[in-house]
Each structure stands twice: as C-alpha cells, then as structure tokens.
Image (cartoon, rainbow, N blue to C red; front, side, top):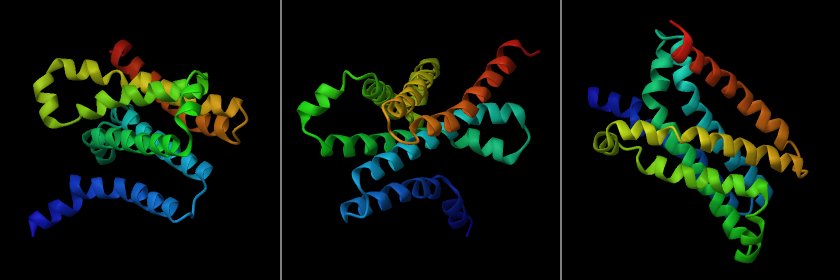
Length: 197
C-alpha cells in the first residue's frame, strides 16, 4: 500500500503529469486540429512556464522557507527544468519539420530566431546532466554548469519578445507577463544570498 502511495505521489506521477500535455498536443497536431502557429505558440509557452517554475524554486524557498510548497518546488525543480527542455525540443521539432532547411538556415541569423537557437543549445547539456548520477559524478562542477540556465532564460525571453517586435501578436506582452515576475524574484534571491545577513 505504501509503495502504491509513493508511486502515485512520487516522481513517476510528476513525470506523467508533465508529459501529458505534450503527448496530447502532438496527437492533436497530427490529426490536424492545430495550425502550425498554434502549436508553436503552445509549445513555446509550455517551455517557458516549465523553465519559470524551475527558476522560482529558490526565491520562493527563501521567501517562505517553512512551507511545504516551497520545499516541494525546490525538491522537484530539476524535473521542471528537464520538462522545459522537452517542450523546447518539441517546439524546435515542429519548426524544423515545417520549413525547408534553406529557410531555417537563412532565418537563423535573425536575432529573434538566433536567440531561440542559443537557448535551445544551452539547454542540451543542462538536460543531459540532470540525473542523480551526473550530479554525483560532476560534484561542484555540476552547479557551475547549471548556472547557464540563466543565459537560456534570457535568450528564451529575448526570442519571445523579439518575435513580438516583428509583429507576432501577443508575443511581447506574453514575454513580459511571464518573465518580469521571474526577474524580480531573481533579484530578490541575489539580494538575499549576497547582501542580506
């Protein structure tokens, strides 16, 4: 009975819950129920939201150290980080499948697209080293590598916001609404960890 309870409330259930939207949206897209623009918007937002959850874990823990929610977020932030990469990968796959390689190469020099590619490639080693084995093997270097998530977040924000400047409806507003609160929380984290006694 305890094993069943652990299974239903543990990491496997969390993985399942994080994966379900991706599976469902991919199936719906394959059935023609989503346009390309819609699937790109949805996968991009899911990637951003998973990244945001992983980034707010530490600031929330610093603000509310004794709450169960803060402890749960901190304990599971790696899962949300990997989910952010998975949705970024899905976002990238749909993009690559939609256009000929020549168009993708030509667009890659545009700042709005280049920032997206940088975020994607920064995410790869972070996701690959998110296992317990990698944490043990890398020791202190693991934390140093994971600091690159902040670059990925900045590039993701820039990608989203710059698409808005190019006329994609709602992109700028969506980027600001998602990332400004995260930036404020990160400033609080820096203050608390570096300057507060």
